[in-house]
Image 1 (cartoon, rainbow, N blue to C red):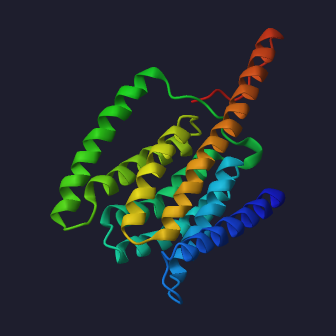
Image 2 (tube, rainbow, N blue to C red):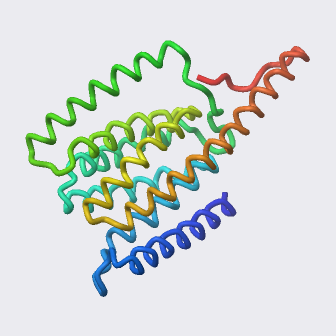
Length: 234
């Protein structure tokens, strides 16, 4: 775990600095006006995300710190749906912490079963239109796209907490909308971060798919030899 944590911090440092340099060169950030809360939120979020790819449970406390910072940042930018989302995620990450279990006995990567897709579809669309109506009433900006980030992230995080491979597809959708929304809201570092997050969804999918295939292969070999299978995917 120490190696993966060091790896995550290094990657987060490089990505954060790179995002800032690009934003500065493009003149998205006025000279001498660095938003250090945004820098901190971006750095901790990068760290958390890479640890998710590596299936390290320590991503949850780091993620809680990052989402708390983002809640304040988005509130200041009048992105009320994103602010509410991160305020919700801060305590909600406790669920994922227990759901993943310790690294030595971590929950295996699995797939969403067919009956659950209808549930996800109905809940997602119902929550989306509800969020649009609520935050529009409070005068939030960019409600339609910000609501996609809100609902999409909640679904993606739930799938992540339960180690479902489909989480990376939901994260990809969220990232596309976040890139546009945060750029328009004057948060260039956050927007650039989601460009890198979009690339990371491909890496995350590949790494988790290999993990899923290893579990299936091990279960198949165990069944052939009449030995107990590994912990079933739920």
